[in-house]
Length: 77
Image 1 (cartoon, rainbow, N blue to C red):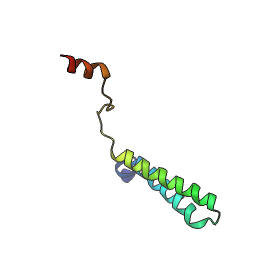
Image 2: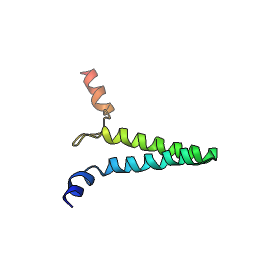
Image 3: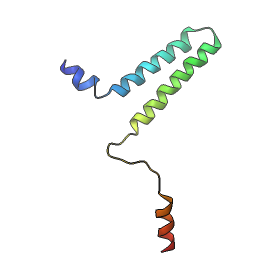
Image 4: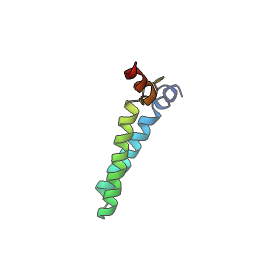
């Protein structure tokens, strides 16, 4: 139980990423229908995007949107 609490639960997003990647890879390799292969590739692509987003998350950060009025007021002063 200690292994699950230390390694699995804190990195649940990475386990979802691995699961989605394996499902997409399996669909691309095992299916003969091209539409099903494209669906598998889409699932694989979603897993990679999820990985990049998960890797870039910072705790305590805010949305990087600049308030237009604050920027405009700085240039007028």
